[in-house]
Image (tube, rainbow, N blue to C red; front, side, top):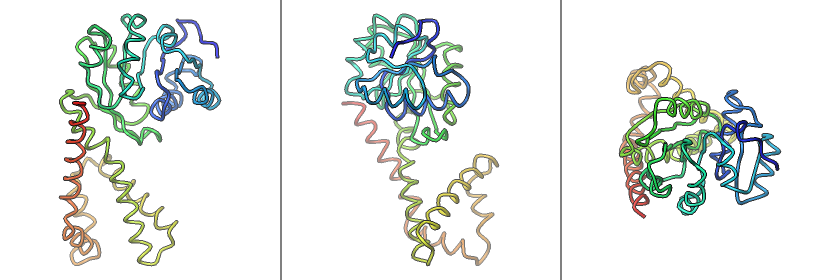
Length: 274
């Protein structure tokens, strides 16, 4: 595919996996960019063909060409190739903003790979970004200004909700919002199994479980109430809900979820040292 002129490309994606695709879809649906102003690079020609066919964006097999053409760069390659990609693009980056979604790669390593303190933001989005319901946390490099931050917030707000925290907290973010979608999927599966055991058809049980989790999360977000107060609202004295809660507490559900987040956080710290 031929790329657009330098002034026309707003965002280049280095690495075109699932997260890059989620962001592409999000910014297009939100009207932040036109398809012709997005450019994706990847080592897989088939992947690039798929993205071009699905979203009509521009593509290239050259990371350097992508960086040269764009105003803003989103780095989404695998952590094990980050260093080589940074060495490849450093001469082309100049003063452009680089946003990294490479899991577990700290700002210091990114700066070292570019051989200078560039304008870098580290982003930690999660899997629900695929359906524009993600939770993203940004950690800002030393040279990031308000204009850079505003642009990053626009991009990640297009795939969900965004927060800005110190980088030291990103392992905890990984343990909670990064890993816990899988914990919730397990919970939905288990709730559906409970429905099946009680006599519901599998398809209906799964749909009811998923919608119930969605609705409960929406109540927390939109009411601003503490989850414990909402729980008390549902749990009538001597009713079915408090009986179910008692069964959950007998199974140490709170400790299980806390332990899961703690274990995922610990593993994130370990991986960050490798």
